[in-house]
Length: 177
Image 1 (cartoon, rainbow, N blue to C red):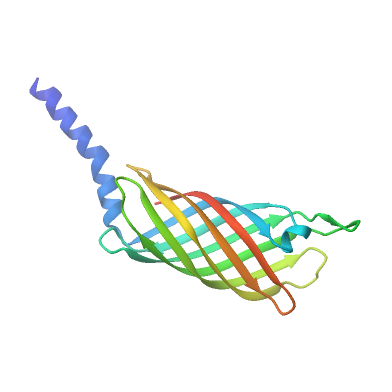
Image 2: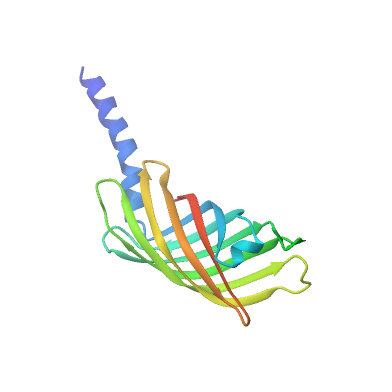
Protein backbone atom coordinates (compact mmCIF):
# COMPACT_ATOMS: atom_id res chain seq x y z
CA UNK A 1 0.00 0.00 0.00
CA UNK A 2 2.83 2.42 0.87
CA UNK A 3 4.59 1.59 -2.43
CA UNK A 4 1.42 2.45 -4.32
CA UNK A 5 1.18 5.86 -2.59
CA UNK A 6 4.86 6.49 -3.29
CA UNK A 7 4.37 5.83 -7.00
CA UNK A 8 1.31 8.09 -7.10
CA UNK A 9 3.26 10.80 -5.29
CA UNK A 10 6.23 10.45 -7.69
CA UNK A 11 3.89 10.60 -10.72
CA UNK A 12 2.23 13.74 -9.34
CA UNK A 13 5.61 15.45 -8.90
CA UNK A 14 6.72 14.42 -12.40
CA UNK A 15 3.60 16.01 -13.91
CA UNK A 16 3.61 19.21 -11.86
CA UNK A 17 7.32 20.18 -11.62
CA UNK A 18 7.90 20.82 -15.38
CA UNK A 19 4.93 23.20 -15.46
CA UNK A 20 6.19 25.07 -12.39
CA UNK A 21 9.73 25.33 -13.80
CA UNK A 22 8.38 26.57 -17.16
CA UNK A 23 6.20 29.17 -15.41
CA UNK A 24 9.21 30.55 -13.49
CA UNK A 25 11.48 30.75 -16.54
CA UNK A 26 11.90 34.27 -17.89
CA UNK A 27 12.67 33.49 -21.57
CA UNK A 28 10.29 31.48 -23.75
CA UNK A 29 10.46 30.45 -27.41
CA UNK A 30 7.53 29.49 -29.57
CA UNK A 31 6.21 28.78 -33.04
CA UNK A 32 2.77 29.04 -34.63
CA UNK A 33 0.77 28.50 -37.79
CA UNK A 34 -0.70 31.80 -38.99
CA UNK A 35 -3.48 32.97 -41.29
CA UNK A 36 -3.19 36.56 -42.57
CA UNK A 37 -6.49 38.03 -43.76
CA UNK A 38 -6.29 41.33 -45.71
CA UNK A 39 -8.65 44.10 -44.57
CA UNK A 40 -10.14 47.09 -46.41
CA UNK A 41 -8.91 47.90 -49.94
CA UNK A 42 -6.06 45.42 -49.45
CA UNK A 43 -8.68 42.62 -49.32
CA UNK A 44 -9.91 43.53 -52.83
CA UNK A 45 -6.60 42.41 -54.34
CA UNK A 46 -5.56 39.56 -52.01
CA UNK A 47 -7.08 36.50 -50.33
CA UNK A 48 -6.22 35.09 -46.91
CA UNK A 49 -2.64 33.82 -46.80
CA UNK A 50 -1.09 31.07 -44.72
CA UNK A 51 2.29 31.11 -43.03
CA UNK A 52 4.15 30.81 -39.77
CA UNK A 53 5.43 32.76 -36.80
CA UNK A 54 8.47 32.34 -34.55
CA UNK A 55 8.53 34.15 -31.21
CA UNK A 56 10.95 34.94 -28.41
CA UNK A 57 9.28 36.17 -25.21
CA UNK A 58 10.64 37.61 -21.98
CA UNK A 59 8.46 37.65 -18.88
CA UNK A 60 7.12 35.45 -16.10
CA UNK A 61 4.01 34.90 -14.00
CA UNK A 62 5.20 37.22 -11.22
CA UNK A 63 4.93 40.34 -13.37
CA UNK A 64 1.97 41.16 -15.68
CA UNK A 65 4.01 42.94 -18.40
CA UNK A 66 6.32 41.13 -20.83
CA UNK A 67 8.22 41.70 -24.06
CA UNK A 68 7.93 39.59 -27.20
CA UNK A 69 9.87 39.64 -30.46
CA UNK A 70 8.05 38.05 -33.40
CA UNK A 71 9.09 37.11 -36.92
CA UNK A 72 6.20 36.08 -39.17
CA UNK A 73 5.67 35.31 -42.84
CA UNK A 74 2.54 34.61 -44.90
CA UNK A 75 1.86 34.25 -48.61
CA UNK A 76 -1.47 35.61 -49.86
CA UNK A 77 -2.77 34.74 -53.32
CA UNK A 78 -3.96 37.52 -55.58
CA UNK A 79 -7.59 38.10 -56.62
CA UNK A 80 -9.04 39.35 -59.87
CA UNK A 81 -9.93 43.06 -59.76
CA UNK A 82 -11.68 44.51 -62.85
CA UNK A 83 -10.59 41.48 -64.86
CA UNK A 84 -6.92 41.77 -63.86
CA UNK A 85 -5.59 39.23 -61.34
CA UNK A 86 -3.05 40.42 -58.81
CA UNK A 87 0.00 38.25 -58.26
CA UNK A 88 0.67 36.73 -54.85
CA UNK A 89 2.24 38.78 -52.06
CA UNK A 90 4.72 37.60 -49.41
CA UNK A 91 4.04 39.45 -46.14
CA UNK A 92 6.83 39.39 -43.57
CA UNK A 93 6.94 41.13 -40.20
CA UNK A 94 9.60 41.60 -37.56
CA UNK A 95 8.03 43.24 -34.52
CA UNK A 96 8.72 44.15 -30.90
CA UNK A 97 5.61 43.90 -28.73
CA UNK A 98 4.54 44.53 -25.17
CA UNK A 99 2.25 41.94 -23.58
CA UNK A 100 -0.10 42.60 -20.68
CA UNK A 101 -1.37 39.41 -19.01
CA UNK A 102 -3.88 38.38 -16.38
CA UNK A 103 -4.26 34.92 -14.90
CA UNK A 104 -7.82 33.56 -14.87
CA UNK A 105 -7.84 30.03 -13.42
CA UNK A 106 -5.58 28.06 -15.74
CA UNK A 107 -6.19 30.36 -18.74
CA UNK A 108 -3.93 33.36 -19.28
CA UNK A 109 -5.59 36.02 -21.48
CA UNK A 110 -3.37 38.81 -22.77
CA UNK A 111 -3.24 42.02 -24.78
CA UNK A 112 -0.39 42.43 -27.26
CA UNK A 113 0.76 45.44 -29.23
CA UNK A 114 3.85 46.94 -30.75
CA UNK A 115 5.67 48.24 -33.77
CA UNK A 116 7.74 46.60 -36.42
CA UNK A 117 9.36 46.40 -39.80
CA UNK A 118 7.21 44.96 -42.57
CA UNK A 119 9.14 43.96 -45.69
CA UNK A 120 6.90 42.52 -48.41
CA UNK A 121 7.14 41.55 -52.03
CA UNK A 122 4.38 41.45 -54.58
CA UNK A 123 5.52 38.76 -56.99
CA UNK A 124 5.43 41.05 -60.02
CA UNK A 125 7.90 43.37 -58.26
CA UNK A 126 11.59 42.62 -58.68
CA UNK A 127 12.39 44.47 -55.48
CA UNK A 128 11.17 43.96 -51.91
CA UNK A 129 9.42 46.94 -50.28
CA UNK A 130 9.93 47.74 -46.61
CA UNK A 131 7.78 49.93 -44.39
CA UNK A 132 7.15 50.48 -40.71
CA UNK A 133 3.91 49.42 -39.11
CA UNK A 134 2.03 48.78 -35.90
CA UNK A 135 0.01 45.87 -34.55
CA UNK A 136 -2.32 45.14 -31.65
CA UNK A 137 -4.59 42.35 -30.54
CA UNK A 138 -5.69 39.79 -27.99
CA UNK A 139 -4.78 36.23 -27.16
CA UNK A 140 -5.03 33.44 -24.65
CA UNK A 141 -2.43 30.96 -23.40
CA UNK A 142 -3.40 27.53 -22.05
CA UNK A 143 -0.68 25.72 -20.05
CA UNK A 144 0.03 22.03 -20.65
CA UNK A 145 2.28 20.26 -18.13
CA UNK A 146 5.49 18.85 -19.65
CA UNK A 147 4.64 20.50 -22.98
CA UNK A 148 4.75 24.23 -22.31
CA UNK A 149 1.64 26.12 -23.38
CA UNK A 150 -0.61 26.52 -26.40
CA UNK A 151 -1.61 30.00 -27.51
CA UNK A 152 -4.30 31.42 -29.78
CA UNK A 153 -4.18 35.07 -30.76
CA UNK A 154 -5.52 37.53 -33.28
CA UNK A 155 -3.79 40.80 -34.21
CA UNK A 156 -4.55 43.77 -36.44
CA UNK A 157 -1.54 44.96 -38.49
CA UNK A 158 -1.24 48.33 -40.22
CA UNK A 159 1.68 48.89 -42.63
CA UNK A 160 2.37 52.54 -43.48
CA UNK A 161 3.45 52.81 -47.13
CA UNK A 162 4.36 55.82 -49.27
CA UNK A 163 1.22 55.66 -51.39
CA UNK A 164 -1.12 53.27 -49.57
CA UNK A 165 -1.61 51.68 -46.19
CA UNK A 166 -1.87 47.90 -46.10
CA UNK A 167 -3.94 46.35 -43.31
CA UNK A 168 -4.49 42.73 -42.32
CA UNK A 169 -5.56 40.58 -39.39
CA UNK A 170 -3.36 37.66 -38.39
CA UNK A 171 -4.72 34.70 -36.43
CA UNK A 172 -2.13 32.35 -34.92
CA UNK A 173 -2.27 29.00 -33.14
CA UNK A 174 1.00 27.82 -31.64
CA UNK A 175 3.10 26.46 -28.82
CA UNK A 176 5.41 28.23 -26.37
CA UNK A 177 8.15 26.37 -24.51
